[in-house]
Length: 362
Ligand SMILES: NC(=O)c1ccc[n+]([C@@H]2O[C@H](COP(=O)([O-])OP(=O)(O)OC[C@H]3O[C@@H](n4cnc5c(N)ncnc54)[C@H](O)[C@@H]3O)[C@@H](O)[C@H]2O)c1
Image (cartoon, rainbow, N blue to C red):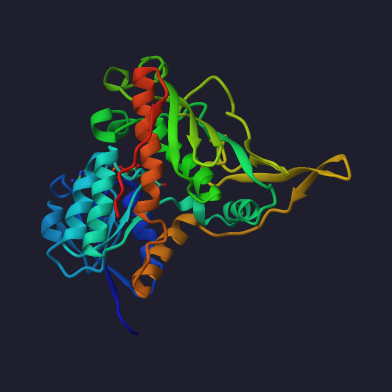
């Protein structure tokens, strides 16, 4: 066999296990290091996942002294920034979990350092790898709808609030909007070719998270459990998106794209209880158009597949390592996603529409 790609894992909690499960299925990959800030946790992880070639570390900077081709960053959101910067500066390509960062300034610097070092910064939005997500994008990109001027998407959970590191602003950055809202944003923006956002007007609340009747950690809950935002983009396009971790409702509705020639409706599927298309759960796609004056609905056949989208995202990162880049889901693109999240927090705090400025990275 040719080259073996040496991978390190930073943060050995829940999602790191999914990274390892996927890496283990790839022949030319070896996990050679695991680091976790909690002493002994990396070693436990190595044992649990039977990573015989791996060495455990309590400090990711020590692990980064090893010869590594890439790292998977699976820490809580607050640590994404420093671990990414350290990894890129140590010459390692990065597979970073979503959301990209806690603040827009951090995301900007992360992209700058990726450019300076020439190392990939790849963000882990696995729903993109669902063939039906590609189908939706293809319909829009090939012009089936004409010019798209309005998109509505979102979704979330009737009851599904996380705890621990996800419910503190100082650790997670934001709540439902950052945790699962970033997927809805990626669904809409990726389908449209990542247009440039200009302004956002948002509302967020946390009536469920701060109520001990609904959340056992209500006293420390200080992020949003619900949010809605109107985002304006260049070229006369507007997005209406909403997200919930908890609500008295089954779903926040269909995803729709309104265009000058046709409209597209995407209904969530029955996989899982989450009531949204945001996690790649596509149930039905139909196009509304006129044929000789008749209002017509065309049902688009879905692609039947057995792919694990998580496995696909890891496989694609390794493919990019083999080919020397570019990053399949580049940080530079996701900067726009992060800028919208930043605008949502500012707008909901000031109760006003706010402008979105993304510094020119060059
Ligand atoms: N893509 C997905 O489907 C998906 C699903 C769940 C979580 N996530 C994302 O993955 C990230 C981690 O989530 P999780 O559920 O695994 O959290 P977790 O709390 O289970 O695990 C995080 C681990 O990181 C460790 N850690 C914290 N700071 C560190 C640092 N500076 N260096 C090294 N280790 C550090 C913690 O001790 C913990 O073991 C979050 O950003 C989350 O949004 C993605």
